[in-house]
View 1 (cartoon, rainbow, N blue to C red):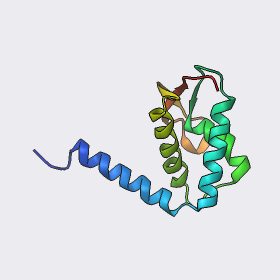
View 2 (cartoon, rainbow, N blue to C red):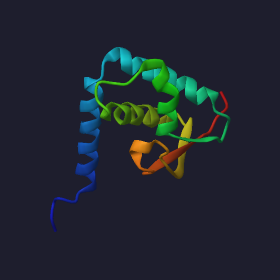
View 3 (tube, helix red, strand yellow):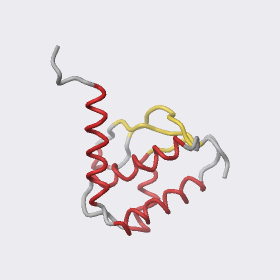
View 4 (cartoon, rainbow, N blue to C red):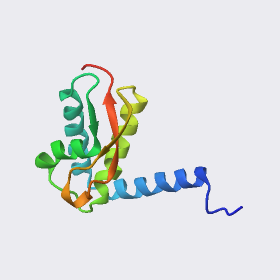
Length: 116
């Protein structure tokens, strides 16, 4: 069997890539994203669903765009993992992206669990 298919290595490489992207994001931009993402979560009703694209639509007007487009996903993945660990959200299924440049790609959706 080929070692090209290994879930544990794939996860480690994913995490390494996220760390590399988020490590290169300006600290001020990342802090702004995290603060505005928390505001976004607070604004949702309990059991309301959302995607990373929804968070981006809320955050972007306040903090602008990062130096690299992959930074959006890298920082969001860190935020969503923390929220899941803290039991604030859980996976809800799938939705389609609405951004024209995303070509209606399938996105994971999440549900807010607690009212803040």
